[in-house]
Image 1 (tube, rainbow, N blue to C red):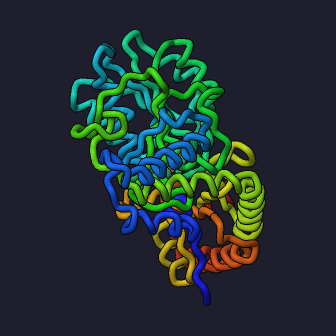
Image 2: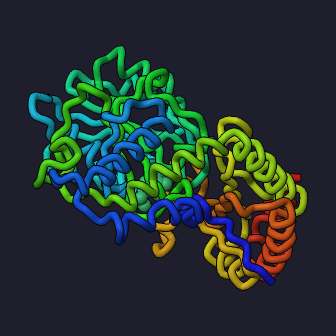
Length: 396
Ligand SMILES: *Cc1c(COP(=O)(O)O)cnc(C)c1O
């Protein structure tokens, strides 16, 4: 039987049209775009076109897009670049407890280097509260970094309100939009975003290429020092094939955004409803409806270990995840679910299923069927589940 891929939040395949667009730039059009001879003109044009395609996906100007080697690099650049920028005096950065490791580990690095970092809590659905942000603001706050949408539970943050608050207070606003770009509408102007991170491989582009939007006029220290590429802000010979791929992927995904958003939301809701109906005490983690990424489902099944579920799902030919791909090798419960107030057991018993281009109703129904069987079988031998039922009986 064909296997089912439900881990699109970890990475997507590269769309065939994107691969096709990239191929000539590996061999025929190999010239260094920084070279002065006319042979490089085509490559310079290709870079400019990709920059415009990526800019269009977030309502930015092409000259505000700076290509990087990954979403992680864009995140590192935003935080370190803002903290170490010349003329910026503050030592305080605000972020949240539910960020991707690329932000959290960078924030820890800043703490080791003399900065103060506040990690905002979130509500039970995984969203930050504006009042908490206001309370955290200090005279010396330089930056607020809040992800656009969470990679584990799909919670979309109140970005417009956060942007307005930062603009009013005169502090920089960065958002890690790696899960959101081309999946939900983004306009950096109306949302008052100063810095925005993205990665091509989350929207059917190649791995190993990302971008940072830097609003015109924002002063950032460089992360990668060297040659004068990217207007002197990010050194290294431009990775023309991958950048072309990112541009093409952005263009294709934007053309399909509305239809995919509707199609995937319907599949998402079918999956959630199916699991809730078939599995007693199935718990949805994160918000419902519009407040959630169209392709994200994250459920906890009390009495069962998430890792066990993943292995059983794998045997059934279904590729899923417990949360973030980067953390799945560790046995710690998800920092996101813990911040949302789940117990250790609930956090351990969670599965993330993320949908994409190849997902269908038939696949969704097969996953519901498989998970129903797996959870029932695992619960039948689980002392945790037995204890849970006893507690319930006492309550009744
Ligand atoms: C995938 C992801 C990243 C990291 O992107 P890479 O290109 O893999 O470095 C950062 N933030 C979020 C929210 C992500 O989902």
